[in-house]
Image (cartoon, rainbow, N blue to C red):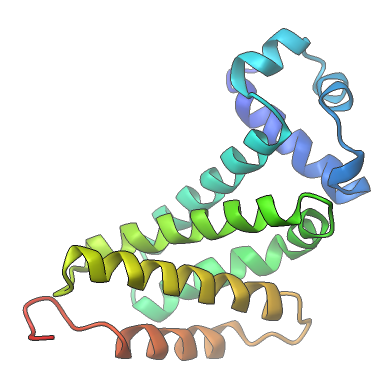
Amino acid sequence: MPPDTKALISETFREMVRQKGIDKVTVKSLIDACQISRQTFYYHFQDIMEVIQWSMEQTAQNNLSRSLNANSPEEAIGIFLSAAAEDYPLIIKLLDSRRREQIEKIFVQAVRKYLGILLRKKGTALVYSDIEVTLDFWAFGLSGLLFRYCGQKDLDIPQLSRQIYRLLSSSLPAAGSPE
């Protein structure tokens, strides 16, 4: 068995969704494709939705690590946008399902967590309750932008990154500055 069974299940799931859509992927078809037992699957995940959530969290964590090493905030946002554009066919397949509402919620939560960590690393003058509202606003807004723009063939990621950065930075007081 591979050293990281969760990653194997997640990657196999992602490939199956790309090929046939989420509504056609069952636990049975997934365990057959992974060549694992049902017991092994349920040891790692409760259900298909948990596979989606874990996969999105891992993708967000990977993007976060790369973003924290970026040379500028615009580059950090560009890393996130590039990843979303690359995964756009998968995102569309996930959204084009009877589980769309659940998947949107998972997606927004992953974006919110990503933004929250970036915000904490940057520092802010906002009080906790304002941070929570700001993160919700940004997560829903950024998710909507990703759903709308990342599938465009002629997407100018550096330009969209600059635009998003200007929107985000103009709505956030810097650490140590009065609100």
